[in-house]
Length: 87
Image (cartoon, rainbow, N blue to C red; front, side, top):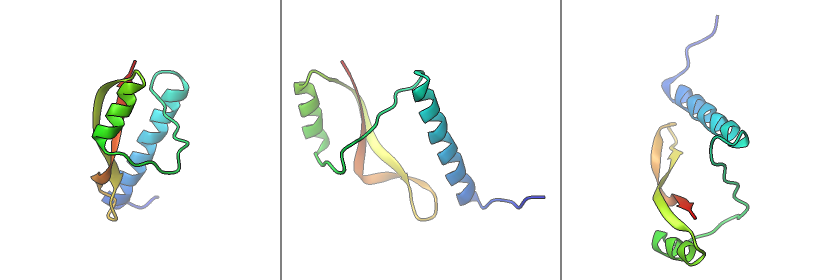
């Protein structure tokens, strides 16, 4: 018999499972998969959107990146954003 998981641990496991599923879908071509090789890059959303537009990309949407806090809750990042661009 196993033991009951604490709610925070269950959320962390579900989040890891979700990310694993998304990565698998990306490898199968059913989901976008983005690999980031930059160690660190900072630009305001306005600057990044302007740079991307100058490269011929069209902004579809952008939103605050989500991450886990110390309790394991999913929260919006104070500093990071996620972007979706198309051609």
